[in-house]
Length: 315
Image 1: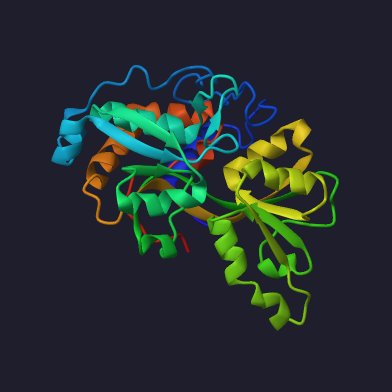
Image 2: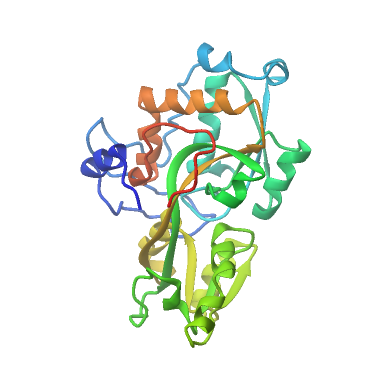
């Protein structure tokens, strides 16, 4: 599991476990990044994107049809904070890391955001048809996905596990053999489901009872199943599980990181949009907006040094 220079620097300037007070997805966010070097942290309600101006250098890299059209079509998966969620159910106003980064790159490129909520598992296939220009949903960069999709990276997140807070029998998972005999809840169509299903034979090979995988389309259903004891352990994003465990109402305990992954904007394979998005992310890193977005949501540990186009999966 790598720790980049940027992540080490930001870790030294911020708390490892930020103070978060969002009771649950769909309620009013009270997310507060810890203050540190580089100025005060943004508050949950601060719009750190509003002041951004068009970057002529980044916009010049846009494909002609997008430059003329003026609109960037996002297919976005909304679930649990801090990645992408609704700030309240009444307004259905989008919020979260993916939302702020999407809005920020669009501003730098001089484009208007057209965002459509979509089920996580439907977004990547829809890129090929041209329904969306960009897909967001905390999409981890994996070898399997790179065969059919391109990525422009903007954070580093990955896979982790959580259990009920009062469950002291299950310890941090460093090997999937530790899951033998357990029921694991996770999201449908995710890297977590793929990882679990691709290794299901390891328990039988070791003479142990196999683990069972239950995949849910709704992120809230995974947590509910854990709380109700219908699954023993939850596999999801590192940032999401950390945030979840910080909420007293969740009744969960974060077990730790299992596998780090770059996270990126998903694009149709061979998309000419990739260089422009990469330039925009790198501009955000350079001008300090990038750090402010991460600190706003308390995820400074997810910083990358620079954006890459379709890098290999972390090993």
